[in-house]
Length: 298
Picture 1 (cartoon, rainbow, N blue to C red):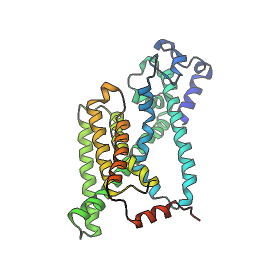
Picture 2 (cartoon, rainbow, N blue to C red):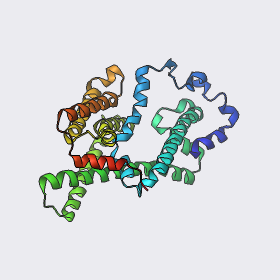
Picture 3 (cartoon, rainbow, N blue to C red):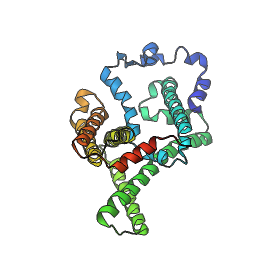
Picture 4 (cartoon, rainbow, N blue to C red):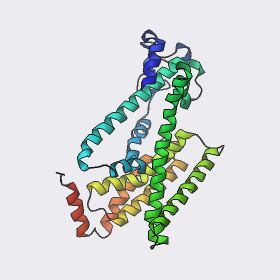
C-alpha cells in the first residue's frame, strides 16, 4: 500500500496528474484510465465476464475456506465479513495503482509485468528498506502455500487414507500419511516450476483458481442455501465441474477467450441440482441440522 504512494511523492504529483502515462509509450492516458478500454480498444463482453468470474473462485478455495472454518465464534462472522471485504477492496485498488505508477516510473524499460512491484521497490528505496518490502512477496507466497499444503494433507489423511485404505489407522499414522502427501505435492510443484514450458506464476494461479472454483464452489454455495443437496449431487458436481473446467481450458479457452471457470462453475451448479433431485433426498436429521444452522446465535 505504501509503495505506490511513495513513488508518486518521488515523481511529484505534477508528473502524475493528469499526465500519468509516459508519453513515450504511445498510450492515450484517457484510454489507459478507462476500465472498459484495453490496448486502445473497448473490452469485449466475454473479457468482462471472464474478469468478473474470478470472484467465483473465492467460494472454492480450501485455504480461504479454512479461515472461516477456524473462526472462534459465529459472532465474529459479521466483523470478519466486513474486514475481509474492505481489505480485499483496498488491495485490488492499490494493486491497480501500482501498475499505473509503475508504468510512469519505469517507462519503456518495463518488459515483464510481473516484475513491476519488485522494480519499483528496488528503484525507489534503499537496500535495507527494499529488502523488508520485498519480503512481503515471500510472506504472501508462504501464507498461501502452507494453507494449501495443510488443507491437502488433512483432506487426504482424513477423507481418503483412513476411510479407504486404513480404517484402523492411529492418529500418529495419519500424521505421517499427511506429511508424506506434503512431500509428494512439494516435489510435483517443484517439477512443474522447473518445466521450461511453464507459463509463469499467474498462469498457474489462474488454472488452480478455475479448477478449485469450478469443483468446490457450487457445492459450498448449495450446501449453505439448499437443504435438498445430497451426497450424490455434491460428488457429481465436483467431478463435472473439474472436468468441464479442464476440457474448456484445453480446447475452448483460447478460441473463445472465456475464462474456464465460467462454464465449469455453471455446469457443476446445474449438475448438483439435477442429480440431487433425481436421487434420494437427505435424511431428516440432515435437514434438521441445516435448519438449526440457519438460526441466529446468541
